[in-house]
Amino acid sequence: MTAEVPISPSLHGLKRECLSYGEVLAQSIAVIAPTTTPAANLALIYAVAGNGTWLSFLLGLIGLVCVSVNINQFARRSASPGSLYTYIATGLGTSAGVLCGLGLILAYLFTGMAVLCGFANFGQALFAHLGIHTHALTLFAMGTAIAWYAAHKDIQLFAKALLWLEGISIGLIALLGLLIWMHQGFAIDWHQLTLKDATPGGISMGIVLVVFGFSGFESATSLGDEAQKPLKNIPKAVMRSVLQAGFFFIVMAYIEVLGFNASSANLAESEEPLTFLADQAGVGFLGILISLGAWLSFFACILAAINPAARVVFLMARHGVFHDALGEAHEENMTPHTAVALCALVTFLVPASMNLFGLKTFESMGYLGTICTYGFLLVYI
Image (cartoon, rainbow, N blue to C red; front, side, top):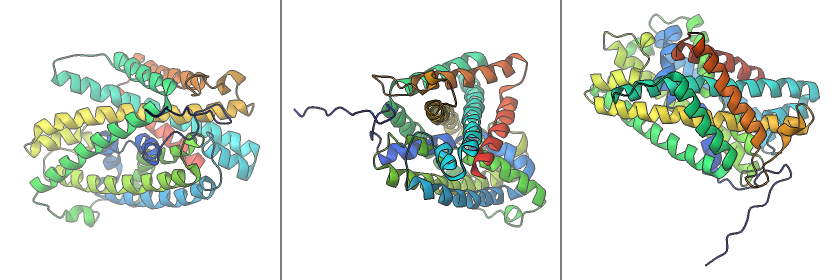
């Protein structure tokens, strides 16, 4: 038997070079949460962009590829848990770095809050199919608690979970998309290609919501201490996550709008568009599996949003911006445990409070997602 070589902590006290390229890529993919956009958020984008939805995704993809190129100028030269906060502070000074660090924390936390609402919304629908009625607060607490435990306990456990959860979810939705298009006879939708009734203003507004769909693609940069070959694997993960997610979004947007254009239903008013289209295509059983996949993807995104937020808080605390306790790493787990606990608590409290004030979880997801988008836009600019 070969003795297992212990992994030593990095300069910051985190587990050093323990994550493979696939696990680093899984971090960025999980915050993007590609399955949640076609499963839930696409209706919000279609409501403003109409038949120009695919174009909003394409223009958003082009813009974020340009952002990725700029991020990778730094990611190829330095690696730390601070993500873009570190890069901006290095290039523009402490004040700009702190401002954008706060924007980044806000963006990640509000992403976590938005997808926690999606987790509760899809969870209630999924359990209702099984005859089980649950309260949103119960699902808020469950999703946050499990995410906190995984982020607190072990970064490798966390990364492997993301890899499997997102892989299964994307595979299921890609299969359903193919079946829906097949049901439509692989038709060409000229209404979409000619942008019928779409307006430049609507397409532009759609791009803002598209950025939310892509948001967090740079989160792999928060794994600077924990990634293997970070100066090579992190830039590769940042660019690849954008390109893969962008292609997936454009194809699924085209197929879903095509499916709804061929029916009497309105995509803009649908909370579960893929379930509806699965029924239309005669594969309703797959719709339930898609709901399960989307639910798992929402959970993966909660976990993936807490992780980089905690690491940015952790490094900013070590730089004296926040209380010293937030900059402590767990001696055994080698995770930023105090920062993880704080981020998890905030992620739970805000949507829980909105629910207590009577807002529906689907509405809360829209509000929180919009706020997080502006946090990312600040940092990307």
